[in-house]
Image (spheres, rainbow, N blue to C red):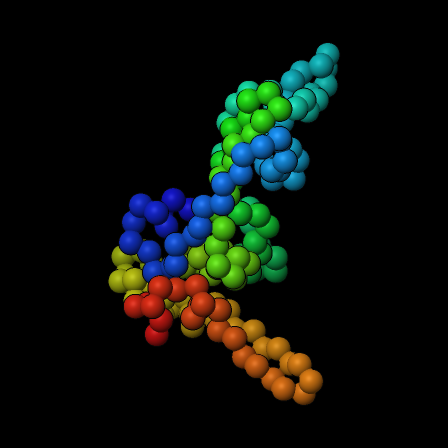
Length: 152
């Protein structure tokens, strides 16, 4: 995920969404917590102080390249009942992260960015067809998530 910040990337930058207030941002399915041993069992207790670094949540469905987005990355700091959280919000979030996963995991990193984009668009088209009132519209999400100079 940090490749998007540290290295040249053809993808539009994600926006940082800041939150400060009572604990409210999950990491990812539950509010921040820690696991403690209670006798012979492990139990979840609310986090009182500490950091959580939640990576991009994803899975594959039918094939190893059939990516499914689950949750965006979050950095969270809890101090008693207060939380400071930074979420990474991408444009066209589901399509963005699924295309990013394909580009990052399934294209040859020795190739140029342009060649990698061409390969990814060919093998992972990310085109959606919608029909409303008899009118059909095709949307190529690659064109909505790539920086202008990388749209082919």
